[in-house]
Length: 324
Length: 268
Image (cartoon, rainbow over all chains, first blue to last red; front, top):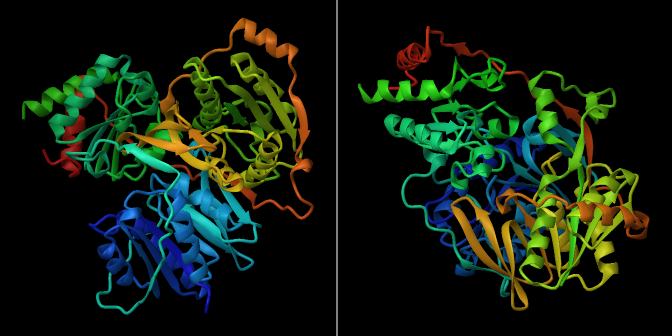
């Protein structure tokens, strides 16, 4: 039984794989090719057939499936033993986990469970002396760190956004399928009040985003951001600084500890461009910056900029667009 | 309720970011630290301070708590431990570990040994991640090592019978979970601002130096670090920005929209 490079997809939902999962498969495929190892992928959740099918069509030699109602919501008490079984079944030494909100809970427990190690926010996998090494962001994005592993157990790598291009599907490829047993235990952590179901558009899906920061000066001025977003048919976002101040909702926060976006156009208004924020918008096709400070870091990452007071530029933009 | 709060000292990420913005951030000859590291201020990891605040709010809510704050590392941590006592922690423990690198698993092993030696710990609180290496692996590794339940991204914690009720920050807002004790809970900035130390607290902290332990008590002979930092690097510089000029804000706005439409960025 040869060693496989293993991807673990968690809670994909009935509509199938997400972009993050496809990026993980792309990264794993490249690493597996470098090492001449086969690719395996575990899919853990409920109603995961669509995801499992797409995995099979993405070139995985083995797809391992755990599909149960008890796995509908992520719970580390259940997902860790299932993933550990997938790792043992595929003799995986390198385990790649897609970015997602459950990574913080899942990946370190999984690594510790198997006396391995983990790195999160991985932007690049390398090879040194036959072992994987990982580059990950550090200091909120201001630096990058290259790590090597010394633990005896598996290396679990949680990826950063937009690490590798998604794979092409090859319909009808043959893949071995293994069923994974689901532990019959009650998780020690139970959801008693789930978060509201998001009705309406998600910030992560918006093609046009207008984000405001401290340069707005006061809570009332965030209204200008909302109005410009409406005028352009986009959605409003915010820097962590103004969310902490209560000028915008946590759901609107863009950045390292908020949402990671990849819109067609991202307006950064009154935002200096601190690396923690940049992480959230760096994948935009085009960044437009408005800031009074010509030295603001955001201008190093933007394609277009206006050096002026956002409290004058925003109303002008709104009026010009609305009058069209 | 016996609570242990794990804290860490980090380079102030705002200062690191400021140096990066001014183009003054550079990596030194060792490749493992910033050149300016002597000039960069260090602070208590902000998420860890919020973890302590979560413990203090439990006490404010009437839960009878004994709150111990722990740091693993060198004497450098004395200042952050004093701050924690001044905020309201009952005691501080410094576990001396001179060989600490970046490995969170090593820290977790030392903490798990200390927590087992304390004995009746109900709740372990940590910040969600260190603002230096942004890894966030201590809470999960620690929970696994001591066999505790794990909750991450806490914005609020309350006692709920013989369990805890935790409000978590999740992508769609907040969810509420019930977790069995003993539990490890990692706290995020959604908890809100931590309290300032009081003058009385500061004076009490001066009279109460940290208890000293050693990582050697908890690390086995063959215990090696799980990960090692090979190299610290700076990201590549970015590209070209077209600054749109004009006589006033309105003219600049007009020209910007024209440029965005010309280049097909906006279609309206």
